[in-house]
Length: 252
Image (cartoon, rainbow, N blue to C red; front, side):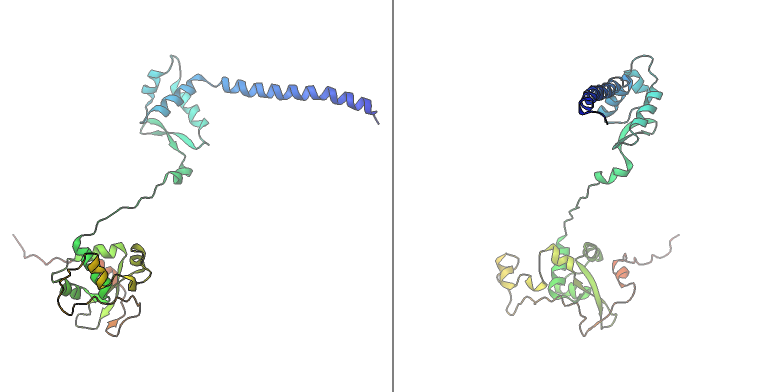
């Protein structure tokens, strides 16, 4: 076995060698960065600064003479192939784009605000307070004919839905509100809708109402009433179907 003195001396000789190796490696890495072709740096700067894709002739005008722009672009494209942004060619022009597998990071969801017409608001209120209610009953309450387009808008919001069919001639659809309606207006249940006094206080009802006028007590019981029948397949599609225009007489 080597003596402790010899072991210590050997260790002293090894340490400087390891330090020299680390320094050489660091210098080589630094030299690689410095030695990166200047034309690649120039292309990066031009492409990053441009708000639009650039073609090769436009890039060549800004580059030093003798630079093979096509080869430099190919090299730059290879350098960025595995990065968060890639150099891509679009319509014979070059630009940096987010890597395809990271496109989800750039996705932005937005909510489109749509104002309901007065007719739609009135119809929604009638459905909320009087459900289950048919289109004919809505028109009777409003005193005017209801446009089918207005009903379609409310169906598209998801705030109302067909409940069933009334057991009357023609078996018209009955409508009611949905959970989405409660969520939209921050209601725990339909019973939380404002009553007569609250509506008056909010200025939504005339204080000089006819005698006996009352606001119905709304109910969102999903069970069908005695005068309702279950929906049939295709009833929802029928509710959203465009109105059928009357046939025109033949013209020459």
